[in-house]
Image 1 (cartoon, one colour):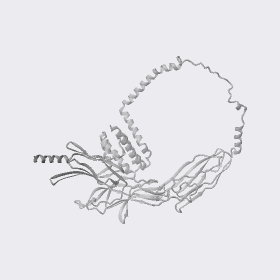
Image 2 (cartoon, helix red, strand yellow):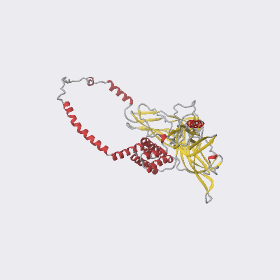
Image 3 (tube, rainbow, N blue to C red):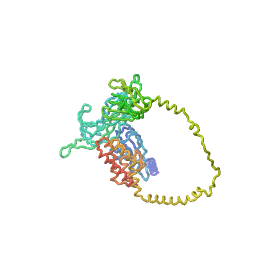
Image 4 (tube, rainbow, N blue to C red):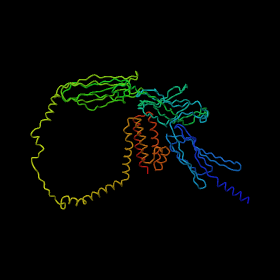
Length: 582
């Protein structure tokens, strides 16, 4: 009896022992420049562990496996853990999908976990995360702002510098691009990255200027510049040496962020704002110049309204001239000759009006006023142009022309009085012909015999085209390549817009062909999907390499020849993938 009781007790304990399999993360909310740990924990020795795809994340380390087993008071406990260190590749709410194991013929799965990825945050590197012997290395990304309290439409500059010391930088990749909401912005091209000597927080080090941007605030109040975040490939020194006594280096990745910046934008004074002010801020000169002032009948003149100087040249409108009714004025032709540098926009903008006189006489174009806000004095300035007199030497006088027009309206000849009365009458028979035996009847009767041969010919032609599988595919390849790359082709002379358009074209091609979303476009996932669709591995690698090059090439120097080569390469790769994908 005692033996059966013990057996029953062990059976009951076995039934009560449940299989547990769960996923745990070190943090659910983190910045895009942070890392976190995820553990897949099971209390049984499960088989066939299936890790999730980790879409939207990069695996920094792992998987590592830990197994522990203990006996306490005659009871055993078992635990197996698979661990990963992950780095988010994009902002937003990301989901780590289910993982699964198999135990005694049953499948057990974890629950999905949501991770919220925010802007990059300032962080101190954990000393335990440093390589052995390191500790004096410097690697910091800084956004230098020229002014933090500008006026509305006053230019400010943002220069992104990477400071480093005792560390080798092997490359970088953007994780989070800066966003300039409520700013007009333009990047200043950096032809070649150059290493310079400087200091950071009082320590001598080196730096590289990675990005320069000019900003014009379009809204008053506190505006935020979202941070730039970079994944930097580095080589760190250790305290180990090789057989020649040289210090050994190890490869690593570091995430750096410039941090968010807040700009307090002051509004322009309202009390003293002149009438007709259109938003010009800076230092300007204003002129109104006619091409000529003496005209003959039928001749025209061009009136140039021009503003030159330094300021927000592209962000305001020029005043419009007011001319007498006897002068016919056409819509202006706008012209801009503006250059943008770190000091702001400068150059000339103009509107050219074509004016044609209608009558003989002298006509006055009234003076025009142009107002702008002067940053040096902090006040409004108004420039008034000179009065312009246009002398039309010949042609009809306006009074005579008006009298002639009025006379032609009032005088009605006898012929015009009766012009609406028809002098002859045409009678039309009310009897109608029968439909049977008419031309329409015979036409409809013979129509099917004429249409049927045409239908047969068209059908045969279509079958011949459909049977030409190779030709159809080639035509479709070219059509898709042109469709996705048309925008990039328009920007061949503009490096940064070209590579942005090229990258979008390649992503849109993948979306159309593989039916995937942007969140699924990790490098490994793209390679896996393309290879599973029978794509050539070399073509797949060329596609991935070109996509990665688009991001780097925007900030690296590039010639027109290399841009044309990248465009031709993209056309070839898209065409080849269209042939290979099934």
